Image 1 (cartoon, helix red, strand yellow):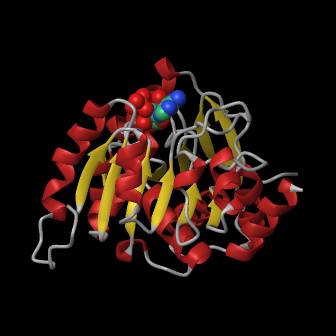
Image 2: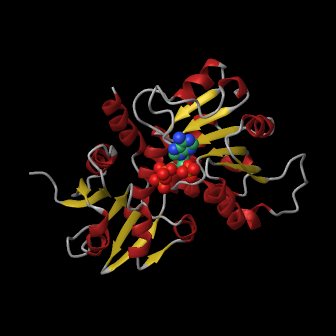
Image 3: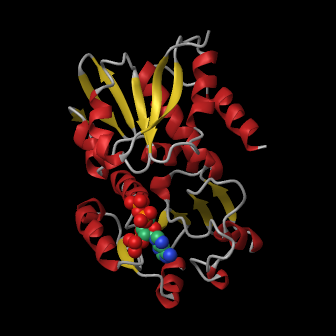
Length: 290
Ligand code: ATR
């Protein structure tokens, strides 16, 4: 008999979610009598579905697209990062109360350390797609880490400008003033990208552009140089165009699988207050990848 469903991921759609595979492996390895399921919830039912978690005997849940912002609304309490990023991806049931966290930003920090052996806070970051939910969560993480530089790149400039206004206090500091502003907003124009890439270490893509081979390049390949690190949060199998172009010039590249893994491991740590069996989770994820 399989263990009772006491954890799950809320999404719409949710069929594609890879979380059950590695969370169930982790639960088995840790000897926890619970299983992790996919829960398809349309937007109009999301609030009620969160409220039903205590009654259903759940330990907690993960939240994916498009419910992360609604999840924050449905929580009784949320931590500072979840509130600032405007989204919750991890719910803890505490009696009748719902506590919200977001492990996406901290998961990215761990992924960057694992992939490139550097800390996000030491990097000059170019963030592509600063207008979406994922972009916002990463920008807030960069601000909370007070990373060296942050350049918000977005097609709709106003969205990135509004975000920059919010984050500005984190980038005002006594640090030695460098040749360029620590926080900037640009569009996808080639000249602006060229100028900013000269003062950057890491490019993070949070847009879905590049998943289809026919997509136009987000960044002209001629602007990519071998000193750059490129992290694409997309983790669909196969490489995105950006990663292909970057590895062709010898830049270090990674896709979003490591962020997926680490945000999941951090959720496990929050639910069970113990270290996650990371190797087991990684193994389960890789096995599915083959
Ligand atoms: P969410 O993550 O909240 O679901 P989204 O609509 O999927 O949002 O968009 C995510 C990000 O990808 C946004 O920054 C979006 O840019 P806009 O703010 O200008 O809409 C970006 N994006 C989507 N399609 C794009 C494209 N073809 N070129 C450039 N950026 C794009």
